[in-house]
Image (tube, rainbow, N blue to C red; front, side):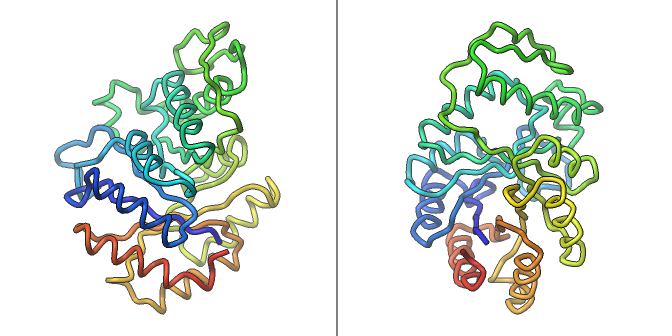
Length: 278
């Protein structure tokens, strides 16, 4: 399996030096990718996430890209309905070009209704908007001028040019564990990005995705594992199950809130998971 790790982007551990150190450490250790989270506006009384302080994900990835040369750069996950798609297409194409083809776009529909209210975006049609935005992004990246006519998003795109375009097809990994998310992944994704799916359930999901999309479809799993707090034997057992089920990549996020402990946890995860890395 490929191994990815989040950079310290959230809470009191975050900062320019922390992101740079986290990105460089991941590359030096041998991780295949580095990742960021996404929230733009969090209600003050929201029970999750534990910190309301988030560095913006795409600017954070650009900063991390400048400190690295090899690791892929992923979003876990970018809430697509909150974005203006033509603007987002330009941002993502630019980041992919500047990083020389290292971007992975993990996408999601979002779940925090107050965040949608703050951004002035309807919450009820977020699934349909996500589908439309994925298609808009691909049109912006491949058509010049654009011919695609949005179905849900209010945007007059036919005849528009959004250059430069990426030099490759930026992979889109559709996030979410629900039945609609899995249908969206099969219909529109280059991969699926699940979160904390129990080991008892992962085999059936991977079998279904492989039957629908074949062996080249990427199956990834985001996990909140922390070797400074969790039972190491249990982590090894779960890694073995995910590997045997056909998961292609584990995307890991420690729970430490201080930077030094975070970096120690990242190193511990790398050492722990070597038997399954490849």
